[in-house]
Image (cartoon, rainbow, N blue to C red; front, top):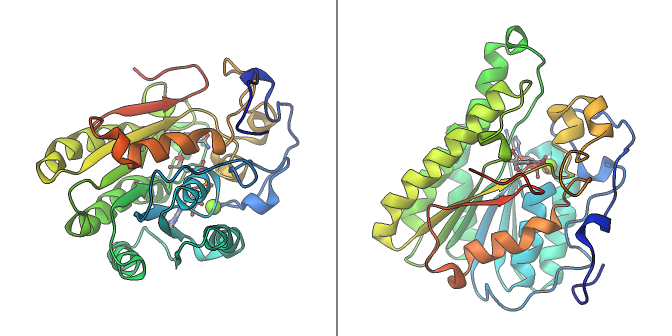
Length: 296
Ligand code: NAD
Ligand code: MG
């Protein structure tokens, strides 16, 4: 696809049925069939983030990867945080950032560790020479059919990854952020329409919405904007690596108004807008990219 011309959005990108494709969490983009589109061949920058310095958690794959590629093409230097098991995906993103002539910083580590959350922010700020865009996007999602199947360890991992790490990373980053900086969190349609089998995950996503709105009220006092993006079904490794059952992966996105899942690239422009100076009157908002379901 090109960025010129008009296309019926229902007819873009792959549609279900998809093949079953189980993989262990964290999933790898490299193992997805069909492969996901993060804008590698299509996203064109327009200098909207010239000279900016961005940290994207979960920037190796999926939605974070699309944001990282777009940020670099808009002129930003970009640090990506990810798990060590995702090095292969991460290296591809590092190469794409560097191909734009921008600085890339790789930050492998586990964000369920508070000390690492502080350290990754310091390393990002040092490697980039400052920080003015923070995308808190890393997430953990495992489907469990009933309440008795959600162990304390499961619940803890979801809370630690999606809520505690968000707080630890934001807390470490705020002292670095100048007026005009932007924080973007990644919530979900699950905050508004929770699925039965995503009890713990949906709870964290509702928490992310509340945290984002509260932080926006605090940080406007420093001239910093804070917004959330709420995706619907997006074709990323989160889903086949336990985020959904394999039966649901086969039909993934079928229930959206488009009859297909969204691709990560279809969120890139939203992250760019919320990060950019052009969004100067936008804070405490939740921006839906849900495939027509809306956010309430
Ligand atoms: P993804 O698997 O590509 O990205 C999630 C990333 O989280 C991983 O790449 C990994 O680097 C990171 N991560 C997970 N646990 C970590 C840990 N302990 N330490 C460090 N990093 C860790 O999948 P995605 O769908 O692009 O997910 C990005 C965000 O989008 C998540 O917050 C997810 O909840 C949200 N989201 C996704 C969908 C969807 O349908 N794919 C829908 C709504 C919201
Ligand atoms: Mg990944």
